[in-house]
Image (tube, rainbow, N blue to C red; front, side):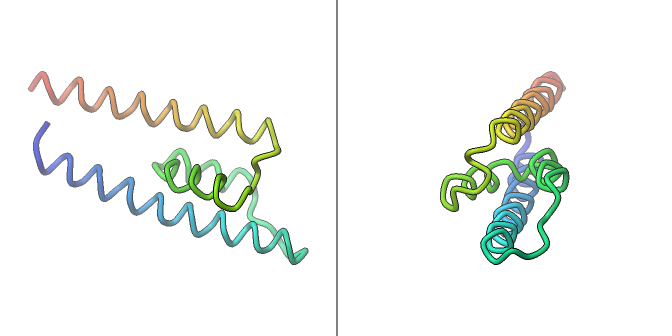
Length: 96
């Protein structure tokens, strides 16, 4: 895989991960203060777009959504989807 593709992928995942981490933190704070929350669909969308590393870190550090099995199952599916997409990108670009 070319260096340029690796750099684009790294920046993509870094950016979405940072955003996901921040949004999960904002949602945790809103939950503690009884304020309006970030919809779970939006949190999962951030994971699917590549923010799953930041989301997983936020879940571990903030203990946010860590006791909701349904949420965690969808998070694991988002991680698996991202890993499958990365594998497909690697597979097709390695054949070029």
